[in-house]
Length: 68
Image 1 (tube, one colour):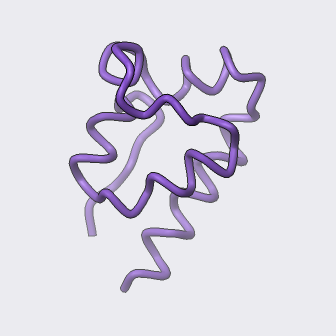
Image 2: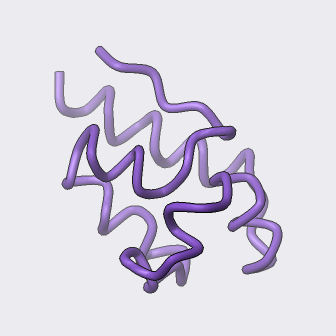
Image 3: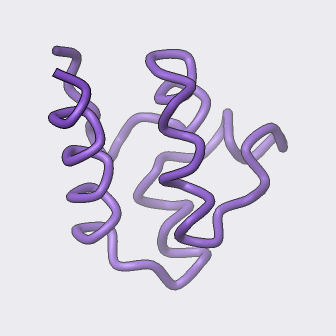
C-alpha cells in the first residue's frame, strides 16, 4: 500500500488514488484541480482551510486501509 504523507500535494494523492477525492471534499477541500492542489502540500492546504491536518491524515489513512 502506498503511503500518503502530509508533505505530498493533493494532486500527488489523487494521482495515487482518485478515490481519495471524496475524502478531501468532505473536509471542504473542493478545488481539487486548481493550481494550488498541485503546488502546496496537504498540510499547507489544510491550514488554509482551517482543517486539523491530523484529522485529515487519519481520514486518508482510513480510506487507504479500507481499500485493502
